[in-house]
Image 1: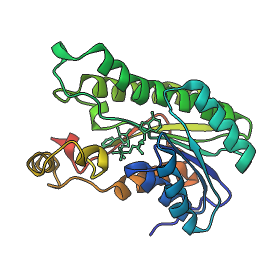
Image 2: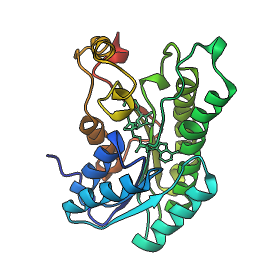
Image 3: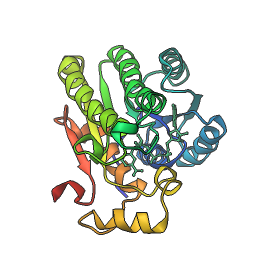
Length: 252
Ligand SMILES: NC(=O)c1ccc[n+]([C@@H]2O[C@H](COP(=O)([O-])OP(=O)(O)OC[C@H]3O[C@@H](n4cnc5c(N)ncnc54)[C@H](O)[C@@H]3O)[C@@H](O)[C@H]2O)c1
C-alpha cells in the first residue's frame, strides 16, 4: 500500500458514499488526510465516514446535491469551519442516466445528467478554487471517464458531460495555476461499482470487459490510487491533464 503522504491535508470527495468515491475517501484517509464525504444519500455518507474514520483521521459528512450550487457552497463553507481548510477536492459525484440514441434522447434525461455530471463538477470546482485560494492552493481532481475522450452509443448526455469536464479542467488549470491550484481530470474505463452493476447483466459486463486490453473491468481502488497521487505533492508538475486509467480501453 502506497502512502501518498497527505498528513495534515483536508480532502473533500463528492459522491463519496459509494464506488469510486468511497475508494478515494479510503485511499486519501489511509495516506493521512482528513476526509469530508459528500453524498446525496445522507445515511450512506454517514456509513462511509464511519468506515473511513478507521484510518485514524478526522471525518466529516455533508448531505449535498452537487447540482445545487448554493448547497455546494454551503457544504464547502462547512468543511472549512469544521476541518479548518480544504487542500484536496475530488469532484466525483455522477450518474449514468437514460440509455437512448441521440434522436430519441429526452430533454428531461439530458438535463438530469448534465446537471449532476457537468454543472455539479463546475460548482464543486468553483467552490474548491475559492476555498483553496484562501490557504495558498491545493489539488482538484475531476472525475471524467474514457467517455470524456470518445463516444458511446445511447449515452449522449453522459459523453457530453464528461467531455465538458475535461474542458473545464484544462481551463481552470491555466486560470488558477498562479493561485497554487492544480486541476486534473481522471478517466476511468469501466469499473465495478453499483453505477455499472445495477444497469448491466453478466453478458453485458463480459462484453465490456473484452473492450479493455486487460480483458477485465477495473476496481474502484485502482482508480483511487491515481486520484491520491494527483492529490499529493508527488504530482507537483501535473496540471491541466486528462489521465486515463482504463485497462487499455482507449489504446485500440
Ligand atoms: N463505474 C464506472 O465504470 C465509471 C467509469 C468512468 C467514470 N465513472 C465516474 O465515476 C464517478 C463515480 O461513479 P461510480 O461508478 O462510483 O458510481 P456510484 O453510483 O457507485 O457512486 C456515485 C455516488 O454519487 C452519489 N451521487 C449521485 N448523484 C449525486 C448528486 N447529485 N450529488 C451528490 N452525490 C450524488 C450517489 O449517491 C453515489 O453514492 C461518476 O462521476 C462516474 O461517471 C464511473
